[in-house]
Image: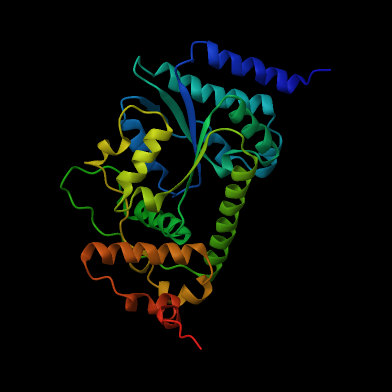
Length: 304
């Protein structure tokens, strides 16, 4: 007896291949909050062949675990289709790609497999955006709270030539550090899940590389993967990332946290951000990292 679930998706895939959406490639950015998704989304939406939205299923972020547990696959799929339908209606004759962002907490856990099976059957590109310096996700969250309190909200896009003021440093508590480790572990779990289980087109992106000194090369690779006729980074001339400070500048007590961070990806990412900043200023030396990794890391090994 045919599986009605698979049969429904078979019909859905045919409608996408041969229906009115035949020329439109679907994509999602799968990520978490404060990951640089606004930066990436703004660049995607600047491209003439892309119709990009915000968070079409953001309502799920405000649901409790009990409320999400009661969401049916039919209901959730309808919300996904609605998000793509809105983008399709806003597309033009030259549009090739439509999509929006989905955060980890916007997919009910009991529907994860069905969601990504649906994306695979519909040939939806999944761009998994991560911020490897997870501690800066937390710093951005704390900064946004301060911005709301002081009324100094920052925007992603600034006028060309206008210098963005440095962020006010924040302090991270030990309890918040524990939450950070949980978030980092979940990010790794999503990495593993997508790499092993997702059968559709998939690309892992890191905010640090996209916004770094060689970001144009990474955007060129992304443009080719998305089959766009011109490079996404051509729209970056007037675009700046929200924060270009490194971990030591963003977090007041960062040096006090280094011991707890050792062995974590976030510490290696923080070291890379510092190296990039020192490199661009022409003052890169290994001594800058002694406090972060320990001097032994930079001592040459001596043979017996």
